[in-house]
Length: 159
Image (cartoon, rainbow, N blue to C red):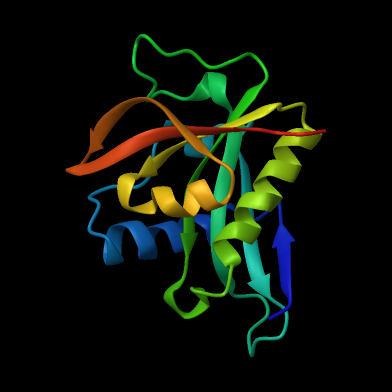
C-alpha cells in the first residue's frame, strides 16, 4: 500500500468516509457538527496510490485549533497552542495495516507546522489502547456521546 494524503479540497471525501464509518457502521445518529463548516478545520484524507482506484479515499481525520472545541467540560480549557484531532475513520478494507497511526502522525505533523505544541482528542474508550500506543495519555473526565463512553486524551508535540 502506497499512502498519499490530501489536506485541501477533500472535505467531500472526508465526510463520506465519516458517514460510512460512524453512522452506517457504528450507528451514531449524526456525525456532523458546526466545526465542519469552519475554515480553520483541516481535513486530512488518505488514498492508496497502488489501488485500482487511487482517487478513492480510504481514511480520514480532521484537526483544528482546540479553542474551537465545543465539547470541553466547563472546568477544562484548551492551552492556547493546543490543537484537536478527531473523527479518525478508516474504511473496513483498509484496516489493520497501520493506516490509523499514519493518519494520526500526519495530523500531528500538520498541527505542529501550524504552531501546535499539543494535540488533544476525545477518544471512544474502546479505542484508548490505539491512542496509548501512539503516545497519548488520558486526562479529564469520561463523557458519554450517544451512549458510547469517551475519554479526553492528549500528546505533547515535539518541534
